[in-house]
Length: 252
Image 1 (cartoon, rainbow, N blue to C red):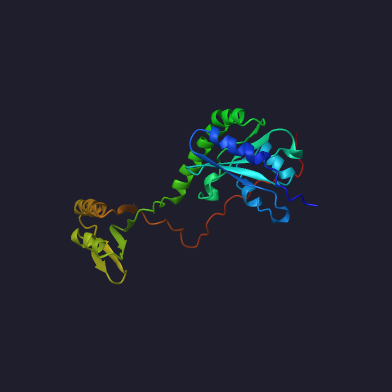
Image 2 (image 1 turned 120 degrees about the horizontal axis):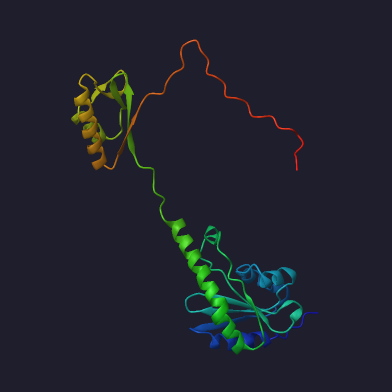
């Protein structure tokens, strides 16, 4: 039968510990309420992949305490397996960071502290909290990177050689169209493209340079391409060699 009398030894330990840690900390004791325990929401945030995580995986937490610093840092305090001596103390992961931000970040593994809040405070201050601060800084950096807008692929205009002329597909932007026509490109309705004649190669080269400079001012790059070579009529492309055949048995 469930004993309704709360075990406050852990709660008392946590309350004294909160007063010994650097900074402003508060302590919240979560007693055993039998089937009404909601401690799973707390243990899910325990940021540990070592002894504390192993202990939580092997036994149910019937009561615990959470220490909270004024900046939101939280520490989880629980009994060791079998309610042995001392307490398990671990950092808790922040709730406001996406799961992807924790990827590749080493957990700030918790500690097994003796049942002395003064000694435990020393271990937390010099061991656990520095690891937590380092891990949290990495998570915050990852979260900021994930939230930052990704750079879009820069817009560019493709100029393609067609015989001696250079052809540009009809752009959607009026300012790009003006840059082309201002520097010698002429619209060819039958091709739905702008064409720069190659009758005067020196003038053609100067027009390309001038057009590229104007497009660059608009934040648009220029790509000059030669058309893809075609296979000769009546010939089929040579098939690539097949993959090598390996023996079904492997040597040592």
